[in-house]
Length: 347
Image (tube, rainbow, N blue to C red; front, side):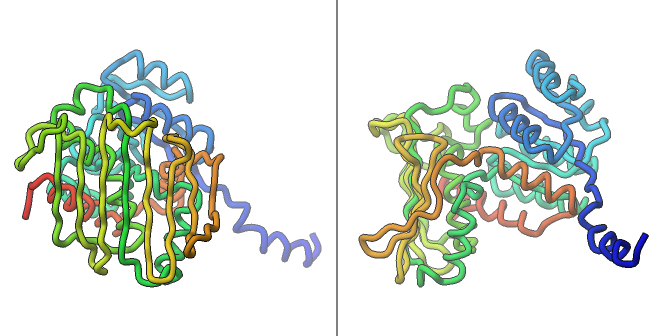
């Protein structure tokens, strides 16, 4: 082999090292669990080796997709040789299941919300930190095309000082599972189901972590609810300030007569311009991201964009590189703390 050839091999060697795919287990195989599992299989960034669900038929069906082992219980799943566990069970079980997986030394990727309350979320984050394992939550709107670039622009000051953020998430249908309507299982109504996505997004995009002067108006079937909220709200109007002083206005709902399937928007207004994430034509899946300067609009991203499983795929790639605890997980508790205040759990 010539010296030139040897040098070329040395230069190329780091690129030729194959990163071992993480071995993952899936817990909870409803539509969101199966959709995320399919996205992971399609991306070929991890191997699904075990699955489990309270419905054995769902577990068998999911196992057949990727040649995984169908487990009869969480305990049996955790006994498998795994690097991480993907959790898509009902919300009341998220913290319990995540802590059990972390204590067995597995990294965790969980559907939102991570927990029903901030103290529960803090327990999960503490378990991840103690075992030095990667923890992620499926706040998938962070991964819509154009949103990461928008975050970079806002944090670089391209919009100037951001002073107002408008967040909207209206779903014309509402959940179809009974547990969503029991706050002991769900943790809350449309804020916990929908609004939490946008609360996280505003925090992630701006870098702010706390809410001040929070005021919340919650309704069920048009009737005002007062804390402690013991029944799930189907409409919420919330206002608060972030650390920077930016005013956040959030409205979200189930079954609102909005004349379309969904209204989803996150708009940021600064002293030098604005920007918006908006759904297209009532779609739950198609979004545009635009920068605004006065009456002019500059498009940053538009459909088609297969963003739904991107957060999980990114987590799996990070797990393959380094499965250690990421302090960014502390922000999951900050998000939960704002939701707690909306529901009146703390002052």
